[in-house]
Amino acid sequence: MELQDVKRNLNKMIVYNGERGIYRLVGCILRKNEKGFYYTVELLDVKHGRSLLVCKLKDIEEDANV
Image (cartoon, rainbow, N blue to C red):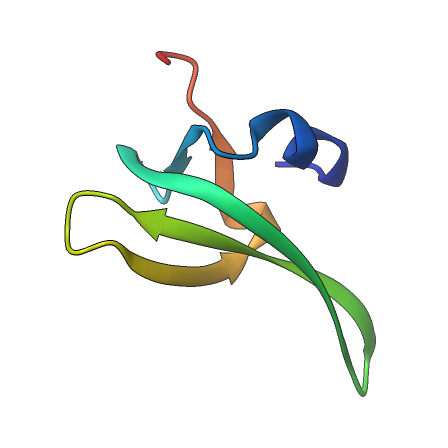
């Protein structure tokens, strides 16, 4: 997913590593390390105890079936 797609997909179901319909996109965070700035996203696992998963922005995509 690209950064410009995040706002449109907030609080919607997304696909993470091929698992469709399990995660809801709830946040995007700008972080900085010694190499520079990068983005991470927060995914809410709605089926398994509402746990929070933090992953790379490039690892998610829009769910076309929703």
